[in-house]
Length: 404
Length: 221
Image 1 (cartoon, rainbow over the protein chains, first blue to last red):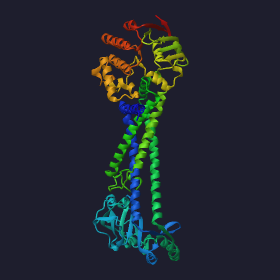
Image 2 (image 1 turned 180 degrees about the vertical axis):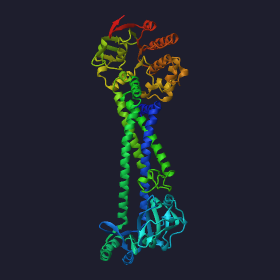
Image 3 (image 1 turned 90 degrees about the vertical axis):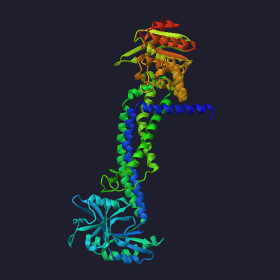
């Protein structure tokens, strides 16, 4: 580095220091700007963190699930399939196993708490579900259920609690009994799912010998051929028997569907963030306007004492940069605490429906570098738009006018 | 050093009324002179000083400072000219939340003077104006006279070739004013050209050239 470069570098360093000092010159304005940025950035980071965390969990769940998902539809609506179709599916070359499932939606209690009743063969209870107390359901006649801990908390039920009738079938109204509670690393299972056997679920929904879908496990490399075979042969027989349209979805297409749903939710959340961004921008413009006489005078003094316009702007840029970096870093730290300690309270409901303000279970999250960078860029854009233009306006007028 | 030729400065007052603060003034200031501008308040002294210090451009006429035509200078060139000029404002124009030493060294920042060196220079300048022990005080903690002396220290810190001072002793008590006049004598001996606007007879006595301003016009006394 030659002497000239050294002088230029030193000049930059000293102007940088002056910018640092200027942040402290007007603490009210700096703190107001910093606070507005935090109010905007923290919920954004929490939301993006939850979205990324859920996406990762869902991908993991799908990857550990079946290869194909066979369901039925009529008039474009989901419709049950005969349970006996499992045997037909098992005969297809390349199929390793078939798990019939019942997934039914219901509302429970006076508050109409949304719950998903999942009926599975005992042997197929998912690994992601860990029974933390009680036992797994067995007796179909008793309508035994295990519930996620978060849902149990929401419904205020414990093991042995009788659930009042929440369904009606030709056999009349029936109560159900909670025999166990589970925890799962998949949060919406915890918050919404009630697990039972296929037989219990068939009774609960009064759909004997029916299931909502089949999970098909295939030998490696057979997934596509099995899918084609199901569509070619089983579809025909199903149509003959039940007039039901068969839908066969691969793991990949299901993953894409979930990803698309997640992006839709993320899109809505981001749209709300954009609204907050615009409001924040307006607030910063107002707070920047506050104390403008002093700022104008300060710039006049700088110009009168030999500062160039670009040096004044550089100093203003440094001020914005410091406030933005501090605000972005603090936002990331607060967002982390919000996610880790408060489980994304208040924001998780955007992504998982039916969750309380305080979810009461660990919400998966990931704070990735890209949203952190976005937070910083947003903070910098807002502070710059509130400061740089006005600084430039004051810097181009003669110093005696700016100081007046 | 400074040459003003037919300089006029007009401001737009309330409504459409045009106020002529400086009216067709021609003036030459040579190296190491002490030029004094006297005159009643509102006679245009401050406006003329602003033009001579490259803080504002004249409405008409030409101003040459250190050989450069101010009217044809870019913003960068004007800033470079101002680095050779120290200006003491009547209202001090200190940055309210900065300690005295930082106020003094603010002009050195774009010159790339390191912070430690700036701190030393500020100490020397404040010592010179008798305020060393107040280097950490903010302007609001200083009296009017002390603020005036900080402003003088700031004007001198970058070793200017020209010092312009607008009523520099107006806020000072007798002792402080005499100390300041002594400082002006010293820096004049160091080769700095001085231009004052003042009513103070002690400063007027210092002048090698004294002008009186009346209604924007300049008359040699």
